[in-house]
Length: 63
Image (tube, rainbow, N blue to C red; front, top):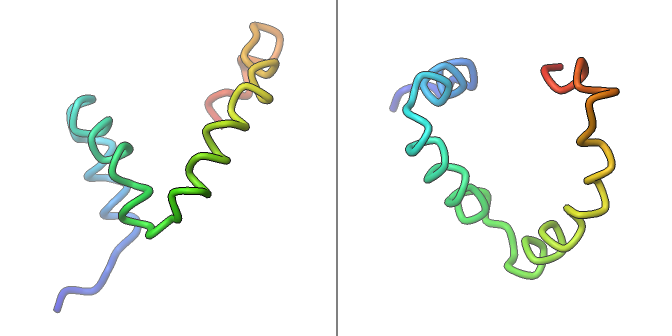
């Protein structure tokens, strides 16, 4: 069995087409075995962080 490599996974995901990245992201909760109730709570909390989407702190978006 090949050894898991986080760096390899990151590299492959970064090189994948955007649509494949979106599909991976959509499947990530199942891959991580997150409970559906946890996913709902995460989605419900997203608007609370919308204030960070502004031009004043855009320099930090790539960190």
